[in-house]
Length: 281
Ligand code: ADP
Ligand code: MG
Image (cartoon, rainbow, N blue to C red; front, side, top):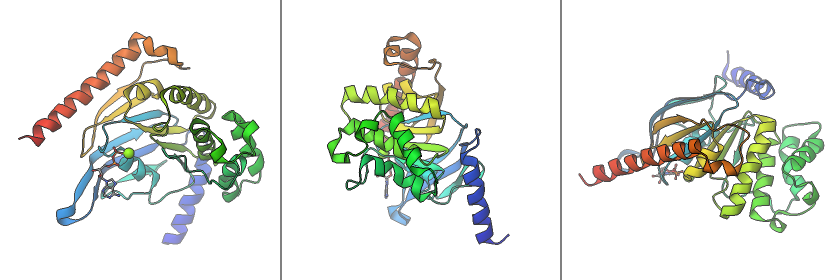
């Protein structure tokens, strides 16, 4: 098949996959990512393989600079792996695509458009014939219907990030990629946002990869916690979370919450010690 035809075919399959229940299987296969060349070469992510099942909520936990964003950006298609491959539903990721929604720490809304227009933009661009209705539904889902005609600057940080989530979901992506999305919020708002995210996700069931350096946040949200070692990062632990759903913040006093939290902290501590020893050899 010619390359153009193959690309068109892949795109069609991708779009169809977005609406099937078993969508959003992420495969990271022997991926290594380095920046720069020769003496400037810096390995950001060591060879790593991860399989994420459709509709799984995975948190990627690790210290600052360990390569979390780099790995997430490889899944998003913003960064090309130096070795190995990333695929979603068996289709190679070779650039960004509408099957992946992205939420960053910065709210990145268009300041000159209303909340409603910010959310409706994606559906319109992807030829959703009911774009306005889709936008209304998602505004409602994140509890901001009243604010539809406001501009981003008129909303608090937490509200803006709810718009960010609604916007990312409004194109019905099979995968939602979140890079420390609540990192800029105060502690109280952050807890409310975590519950609100799980609430939306439970109705929607998209595969989520959520990057954080906050152990409590990872344990509260995830089905699975993947821990990355200090730079250059690789996945050193893959822990299943036994905490039942639906989750609420009062679960943080439960024994199983604390056991998983202590386990994560232990692995992170061990990894930091190892890096420290290596640096001082
Ligand atoms: P994290 O998100 O875990 O804080 P990053 O993925 O941002 O980590 O960074 C991992 C490593 O890759 C760091 O050493 C960082 O300096 C380097 N890095 C990240 N982005 C780039 C880039 N665009 N060019 C060069 N080096 C980069
Ligand atoms: Mg980062």
